[in-house]
Image (tube, rainbow, N blue to C red; front, side):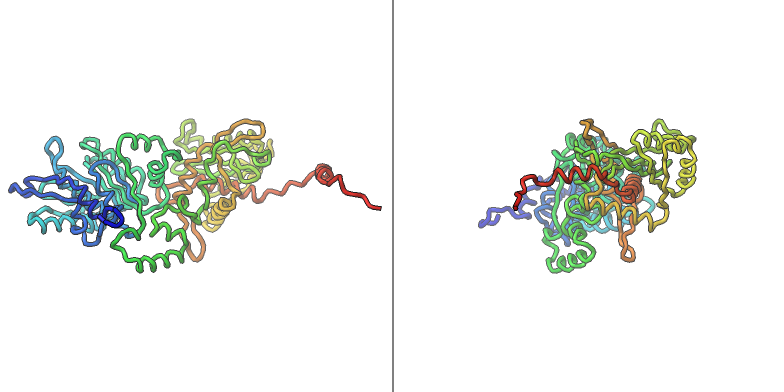
Length: 520
């Protein structure tokens, strides 16, 4: 302890956490061995435990989520914890050897970057210290794993192939760089522990927006979260702890090196440096350049709108039937989204055989309900023929519907549309309230706001030749973003309403002062 400050050092915290769990008969000769948490520094030559690492190492069961900047030492903590689990809990209740799961971005990555680079060095250090053989074999293909002399196995799987986990039972898991893996893999990985004595998981990642932020928010901001009920149930049933620290809080990192890294990252964008070394989620904890301020513009409750704001003007129609979704967006004159619908061929009430006929009927019905005559349509793939059919559709002509097509399959045009929507978000010209109240006092609920928020959090915008190229991640969607971008074009291209001369003169006269003194 530091006598001057009274603070307990990280090393002292580690020693205090040890419960001296013993593993008898490790080598078949009755040798007793223990893995002490205080061994963390000496077993991993690239780590010197900081306070955040010490806290993350302290619990055996439960879910620990480590979100840090690059070089934060999170994967060293996770590798150490997996080894400690494997040695401290070698047998299940039925006497069979335990099995542990390590999830990575792909199979090759998990074998080389997690199993060989993080887990094996700690096992080899223990072998040298104890003078016993721990590793029986290391297997790279077809299913990467490490088998210990106790029969315990540590498996490596891709987090982007969750279905590959379903034939296994595990006793705990480590999910590394979770933000670039499928959310389903996190859920399936936990479900594969259904026969374990306790739930054990450690999740490590850089702070990229998406499903991981929703877990972090549910834990750290429970009063503000509007995330799925499932996460709330997880928090009720198990300990879930979020550990956060920046790259500079890992004592192993040199500040002068990080200064140089920050300089290079800031050349790309200030928010990029905040994410990579600061350990902050871009867009929700920093002012990011992609849809800046979206977390304020999306999801507000009971927003009171003026007659002008809730006056419907246009409808954005992005088409999709199988993998993608059809998304309809009704937008008012000031860029406020008033209504959204999302469906595809698998949605109840929609049939694949008559899908586009039903869409045509629904677009006309919705336009009639809202008094809209301007349709902004995605003409990619089936969209061009759909637009022609809509133009010729008698009920559409009867209400004066005008279809304007945008070729979203032309990359440049699509990028321009989404860029314009992002800029509108920055300037507060694009808003999506979850509920809004019109001048008549009626409350309207806007559906699919959470899905739109998810799309915005996950969309990527790498710079190519000085311009941003917008794309959704594999398995993700951008239907809502494109639909809103289409509607915004209708808002931007709408003619400015001409003022009524009589009304304008009357308002001008009413504003003039009446107590002007007279002279002469």
